[in-house]
Image (cartoon, rainbow, N blue to C red):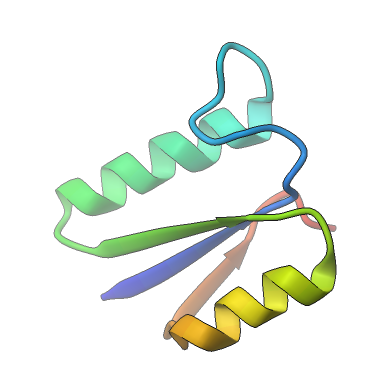
Amino acid sequence: MKICLVAPGWVPIPTNGGGAVEIIIWDYKQFLEKMGDEVFIVNHWGEEETLKMIIEYLYGYINLIGLL
């Protein structure tokens, strides 16, 4: 399955020691890849760029972690 994880874009992923949400997203990505899924992380500040990337890749499942 193709999965797109959407992060708020405040801290890089993988992080260099900060960002609880970013650590969870990175761990989630690694776990899903071990299960055989294809995972892409969108980590941009701003809705337009984020939506553009999601639409471009047309993933079947989008998980909005920390975006609200």
